[in-house]
Amino acid sequence: MQRRRTRLEFVCRGWKPCLVCGDVEGKFDVLFNRIRAIQKKSGDFDLLLCVGNFFGSTPDAEWEEYKTGIKKAPIQTYVLGANNQETVKYFQEADGCELAENITYLGRKGIFTGSSGLQIVYLSGTESLNEPVPGYSFSPKDVSSLKTMLCSTSQFKGIDILLTSPWPKYVGNFGNSSGEVDTKKCGSALISSLATGLKPRYHFAALEKSYYERLPYRNHVVLQENAQHATRFIALANVGNPEKKKYLYAFSIVPMKLMDAAELVKQPPDVTENPYRKSGKEASLGKEIPAPEEESACQFFFDLNEKQGRKRSSMGRESKASPHAKQPRKPPQPPGPCWFCLASPEVEKHLVVNVGTHCYLALAKGGLSDDHVLILPIGHYQSVVELSAEVVEEVEKYKDTLKCFFKSKGKRCVLFERNYKSHHLQLQVIPVPLSCCATDDIKDAFITQAQEQQIELLEIPEHSDIKQIAQPGAAYFYVEFDTGEKLFHRIKKNFPLQFGREVLASEAILNIPNKSDWRQCQISKEEEETLARRFRKDFEPFDFTLDD
Ligand SMILES: [Zn+2]
Image (cartoon, rainbow, N blue to C red; front, side, top):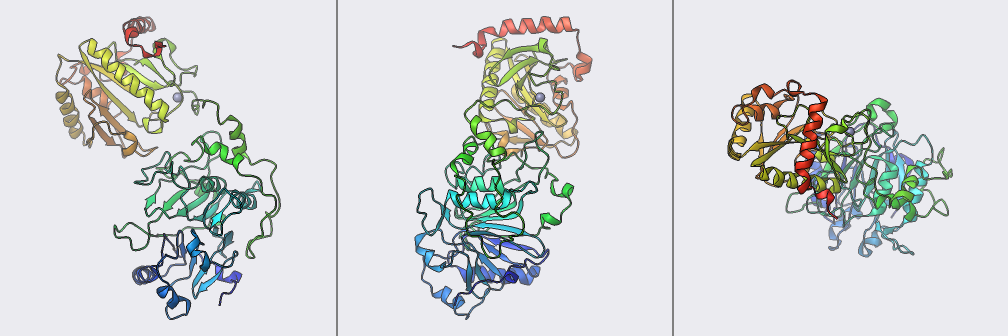
């Protein structure tokens, strides 16, 4: 017999850790035996939340044992509904119900708040844009009604946990690699929109048979909005998968309601940009989702006391983004005065030698040589890791052009970037005469001098992307040779600011040790102007910005 839940059954008791599981697909024994083993070792868990397919397409024999009470789940288990026609039969009641002792179907969509205040929002099924929506799908209306229910007060800050079966589309943007799952192609854009609105601290999903723990992402726009808590997206694999991909995740959090505001918004060191905000398409999501015509029937346990029924006239900042979605993006703005943002009054314009669409070239102040230049983004980006694709493309174009330019002068370039105590990306390009030494000598000099200072320089594959190695926000130093080889150092605590210069100035390479500190190389503004004029003229035949 199926019976309705009472509110008490949803009490999420305090701070005992919770478990989340990916697609069970009917492997109940495998899952519950594993949980018994974990409980034996680590003590009790508060509850188990299952995302993805709880039932499989296999025969029901195993399930019958749970349904009839021969076997019992060792933990209070909450599951999302069907994702396909085959398994709709198990989930008869839209508002959720008990499926077996200790196993409860949460319902099509809703929210429950435990006695401790932990707020969990869930949405069952897969995305469907066509009405009528099949029994295993959610519609744009479902998503917007959840958003309206929750986000319509100015006090709304976010929720603790969001449970969905599909991944949100674009979740991999600006993040660590999502492995074999292409988040631009799979997943649901409606779920991305839901996550954008609800700002969960944890978002769990499944269905892709893959484990992916994304780096936490920001929910606010830096420098334009007050800091908000970050979101952690975690996708889990299927139970008992042969590759032993992670399918169970344990975590423990203090409900945000009970947290100190400053504590809540503390940004993890590896926090990234919001994957949904800048994806271009996301900006239009707000428009695609029609406003709900009616408040959908709230589930009986939904906390009706405050937020119900009040709608906002606008959807907040999302709607603001929509009309401008097609306009070219303005370059990011600096937090304050910046010496390198091209639009900033602080920039030393007389040192600028070439200006492209996204980047520009400037002579280095106090350069190691007269033709030591910097590749800089026009907008405010801290490091190459944060650059958007079109900016990266132009950086590469400048690199290639400079290589040709210096080659014509009998020199090879060495490039380095230090993302540490620096606010605006400066890609240093230092030409080294071919007659001076071989590229391998330069590489050796970097390795040897790094060792002397206990700096671990790792060789990274040719043409590999720093983005794949460094997390946004993480401090690093890397040097790139004309062969495309790169040496990378992850900066943990301290790093000698002049390291790259020192090595290049050393006897092994340019042999100008007195120039290792740029402050000792300063010249007058008139001299700088002369050098810049000369560089501009020399560079002209190579200038791709003059093409067409
Ligand atoms: Zn800047």
